[in-house]
Length: 490
Image (cartoon, rainbow, N blue to C red):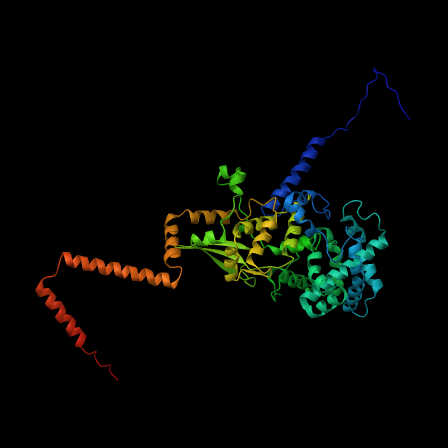
């Protein structure tokens, strides 16, 4: 129905009374404060009321030369998890394997656990799980279909994680049987893709059915240690904090880098630095540059109870020590790093950009194959990429668009203060030039001895000793030569 309106009529819109601008300002201020608290690694007293979603990879990360080259790193290669890639034709073969792992997981829960009980348990959280996805992405699935998807995917993920942590031989045989050896190599990567996640509330329900208290958390910890360090650690560590993760990728991201209050430092001392983005975002020297300045590497083992940070620096009288936690780099590392960074770049997701900042630091430290070699020799980096140049290329291909300028700020200041100390730089130059190898050390002592003898010879040529004193010295030397050492009492 159309309405005609004369020019004399007045259109008036009434706005209800109230402090609406103030309310909106308070909400925005709450969002900004939440981001600030995350960047400074401090818990907020009052969280903003927001519903986080399981986002897709931001489109800006897929643009540019590196973005287009890395596009496949965000796509599943073997198996789809969740609704975003559920109906891809090239991933259908893995759906049959999910039925195998579903039955295996049911049997591992006990003979009294039926398939119907598993289905009903997951159905209790199906509404909350659906709300975790982007609006409209699950509309084509009714509750029964969506619940079946969550059940199959959740059992597959947990069965895979348990087998890696406890029964690697069983997992290898099953995967080779149904997915092939090449497929098995990509499963770890696929379950940690941003667009291939299922809500952690589903995994939590299945974990509680399968494991007693804390046992499920230990399984996750062992699996994460395998990804990070290249081996399964027997040290138990709490991976689930008070705040429940949105999905498995978020949980692994928190485990990947451990932060303490000393890693985060406010930039309040220097007002010029506080507002100078370039100065605060400057790069670190490379590993070999640090070594040339008297800063040596030390591996901090992950079994060490006192290890709460991934990078620490200590400046001593004559040298510096850069401590790094051991990391393993393998075929899927690049994809996992990129997806953790993509998670940090998603909107409506307050976080501390810990992985992006860490990768930016590693890109600065590793710029040449000699840097990788130095890390390998100090047992800090374990990689299976073949050549050291491939590790350099991997870090070079990873983009970290945004970083936490508070994180590692104290580390950067400590290194810069050490490198600007002239006395320490002179000692570092002496060590690197003349004491870098045993032969150089011997050559230095020989050259010093020759110089000293030449000086003595020249001195006594200019000022020779009197004849009487020369005889006395020769007589004293002969007595010393023919004298017998005193006998040792029995």
